[in-house]
Length: 388
Image (cartoon, rainbow, N blue to C red; front, side, top):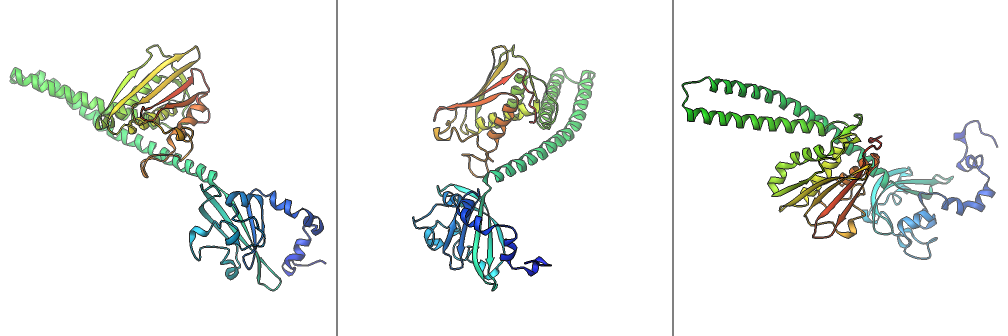
């Protein structure tokens, strides 16, 4: 039968133009099982008509007799956590409209996952609901990637802000240094000042100059840290990057009673790298180490050459260490043992990615109660951080 307008055709007639019913009938179970998304089909009385393998693996059945049983009796209903009235499928008979929603629910193993759920009504010739097709797609990894992208954009914005603030601070600092120099010349040409007063004035002027220079040095390091990753690779002094990182963390370390030990190889060669990427990775590791010692401790930084082609960096703390069950998880995006609001769980993941894209590797050595040591192994002439 032909139709001038598809809107005049019944759903069954339209389907007949797209498939061979005899062949589909034979392979229908395999067809549903081949779908990677979790698919569940229930009738209007909420009895299970079909559930593909992905659905059962994702949410788990309660009973062996799955087909024919009520969905809430046969399956661990993923909407059960929403309470009465929270099930979109139960509301389908009233709305007869496709619904799409995002939900965070536990899977069959109790692990919280992010799901994109679509509820599709099948309507009979009389306009009444006959079946509901639920399609659940696990978007946990996609959500993590989107979160990484959003976090990266925030870091980029923060870098631009830090560079702008540093620039604005440097301008008055330059004026202060100029004024200090004028004061020094004036004191040296002021015979009316007593010798002890002149000495005290010179001492105060020297202090002002040192502190102003130290502040300007800090803002310069902030600007280096804020450089975008897109800058071209260059020969990077890793020892200096380590020292600059310690300098930026010096206030927090003094506040917590953390001391530092520097064991740098004075003959360490420069490495071909994106300096901003290396500095960001070092900041992540050193900041984690300092935060692991809230009641004081020792942060030890070491550098050494490893053979002809590599350099090795150690960042070691005397904190509580890492639980053995977490050693393989710390590199996962969004994994963190810090309290809510204290960490995003992205620092180590980003650090690992940066080092790997420079052709290097990073590993951790830790025992509970004996601190942690992060070891970075980088080639001297590596990729330079392509695509970092």
